[in-house]
Length: 433
Ligand SMILES: Cc1ncc(COP(=O)(O)O)c(C=O)c1O
Image (tube, rainbow, N blue to C red; front, side, top):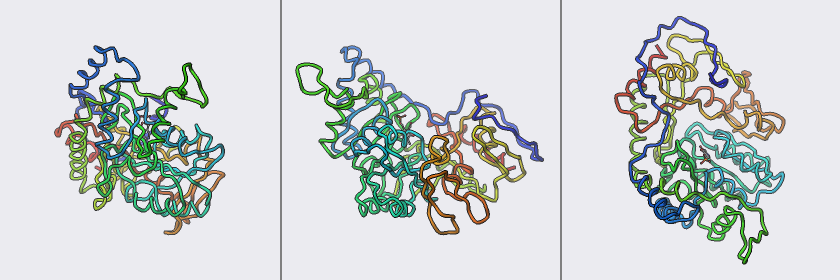
């Protein structure tokens, strides 16, 4: 068993219902192909455009611009490289502090380090689980010189972009948007991936549509797009030989991968619709349980529902203690915890996942600054020497840590049938028996 999944379960009184394991694994979110992908890959093969140039690349850049409503798109090997290019364009310098979403995948943050910057993490709010604009404002009071922020739309749910944008405008900060998980999600009718000056999406294998891998840099700034095209192809100058005047990268997308993305794009809306059905079915199935689904602002946003997640009410949490690699929990009647639910799903061949462990809790980043909201009995706030934020009762109170402790990602694969999902729902329900 992988170390991170190793747990010790202390037997309690609960009599849990047993299920037949799924014959075929129910995935968290796996690629779903439709057929046209192969035709575009074959076209690349048949025409010998097995390269980082070709029609598939040109087409998906055009189509994504049209879909999201941005002027320029540059297809790259990964979403991470797109974030890297965005951070580089923002001109992050050695030692420069950059505000960044705390509750996210490490790929949102690492590119700041590639450029020598120093991430300062901004806590989440409970309404969307994304960067808290109130904490962001407080962060600017603590670090008024910050010029760049990187904001994620977690699990496909748009962040509070109106508030975040106005805080950034007040402080003249450039927004880099990590829309890796949120392609197709909208906020006040506008697509995510168009709010920042420099933005990134991902076509990684588990995303809403995929190229098996891949990513894209999005912007309305022509010069920025041209620079990314140049940097991502080893920064060749316009000269009769290989002339290099800047550091370059081999970051361009393959025309083969682009063929897969091209075949997937017409199915993006259909994937989103399926993901929404899954989310709604879970919401209904858990209506009488002491849990809530990952929330979104129903008035202002329409997520792409990439991953359905749940958060267990405080009162319904059994004891669960995590150290860096292991977890302990006690199984209690009427109560449960993410570990118990994930183990139950795994036992019957269904894949869930813990919520991203917040960046300020990660060994590589826990010495970085971390800013959480002041007030509501919360303890103050930022520390550059470790980031355990303690409440008056001695319990850690930051929002990201709380969501990590009480939340989990549910199987959200669009190939899961309605019947299979009903069984998954029953499995989760059995944990609260
Ligand atoms: C929030 C977030 N940011 C960035 C990435 C990086 O994308 P990629 O895997 O395409 O490099 C991912 C997914 O992998 C992600 O979930």
